[in-house]
Image (cartoon, rainbow, N blue to C red; front, side):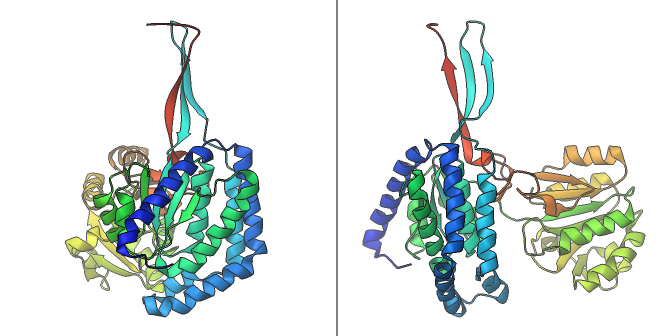
Length: 423
């Protein structure tokens, strides 16, 4: 990945976007069989050419200290035979999903005899900006093309060599099946200003999707001249109702927080009804201690949990992505709902209760992309929802919300068929 002189950068970005726009028209015409054959062939090629991928990945690993990556970030960057096999398997799984393009969403024959059909179509060109995880390069390429779109990938510079090797192999594998040359393009510069240029090319790019830290997402949202599918913080809540089964509540809370702490659907905030707070915390505290989870609570929490630290207002809004959780003891379901709607991020919120009325109230009043009843927040995931692979989880209300899979990367158009009717 090189640095392109500023005088040439704008022209380069426009060329890539123009090529993507032209390719998108061809991708939209590919049959489901062509796309599936390509995905399976690409998976086989990734395994057959794993030495090529691992050599590229080694270059990224050697450069990692210079980028100041943490051990966890280096681990996410690292590829192995097993991880490449996992990437290839993911492509095969996407091939098995139903092709959304051309799906008739609804159709009606009007009194005058014309048939009006609502038909699913691709969005067009996706500009995808994401973090330094090589597997995301392959996943995004597959999801975008399977849904009939062309994609411009702007991955992190830390994974530049790995991502380029994956894209090269994926594109090469598509040639026998009619995949256009520029259906999948990786931006070939590390210049941050390239993102700004692409975000102003709305004549060629139909949607931008940022996946990364809040700073990146806010920048893309503020600068984009095309629609953006995004999510900001993942401040997910678990509310333990007064009618909760406390054994179930403990299992769900520990899983929601500790299964994987650094992901967006991990729980960051815990609300406990005052009627069960003491009994529940006595169950929870030893388990959280074993996971080294630090609690930051209100005054009532600190009285019941001496190891808890006093929480600030910012703590109740925070996405910690690590072993910290905010806690508040509430008087009622009403107070829990008000707290979630004020401090939450509209990502994922859960209630644990055996009270059907409480569950119904919670489902209706909590305004999040996914509301869980007696289930872990970790289930807000495309695969877990049966959507297959996803390109991210959106907390927007337009155009997509929740896990964004194949259908979320499409729009629709109306097809009207008649036999000579006039108005």
